[in-house]
Image 1 (cartoon, rainbow, N blue to C red):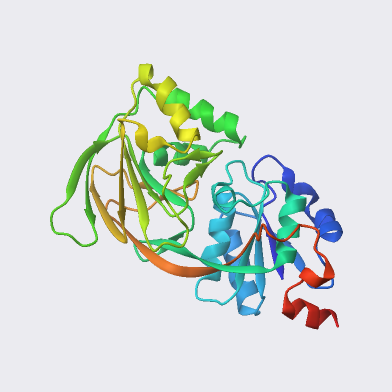
Image 2 (cartoon, rainbow, N blue to C red):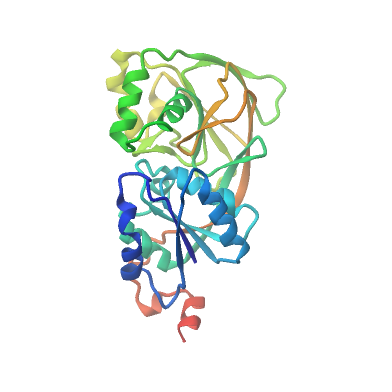
Length: 312
């Protein structure tokens, strides 16, 4: 197993990761090494190296951006992704009901509960495990690239600063190769595999990680006087009740129109281009998920069969 740590992610919970691995990982099951990212997208290179070495499990320690980097490096390999959420939003981990406390997330790895989830591929290049977006969503993700302090306060500060000045744009999107586009003026459009941005803000309440569909949320700019109603719906998993949100499902979506080239990809702003083609790749990522029927402190008789054999 290779553990890839982003040392500057989130709010610093990853700083004790080596000690937490020693005290919480079942060392009878796993031999592991820990490597640290040194620059943007370094996690992709480290994950690719680990996959080429045949590592059974590659663990991302960080936020959604760190997880995305690791997934990109695992492309085409049979390795399984493990997640120790140490970011600020942790959207994919929340959608998977993983513990946000690193020690307990490590114990989930001990369960070795294998699963397979969808990914979304953008323009045959970018892999998205959780969520992507254009418009205001991508604008904030781009600005976050230059912010020294991560976390929800920094994110919210940017949103409040930019809220009034950012205007809706006209978009056309084509669902499942249909010739006739849907045209909307939108504040932002989310293209989701998981159900949320992170921070427990659910933008795609019906999204499932393995259903073979992309969930699209088209959002108008919410007038200030409507925010007291719309924001609670976002956190109550009922954003579809807002008059400012329209939901769609598709396996394939092309977005054109007034796009400023920037896309939010799993929480990170990327300069992608003006035509965006998103495709669902059904059950394309092997992952270690949580089995809630098994306690996080595992008895000998609850170990997977392969683990009991190894232990002997």
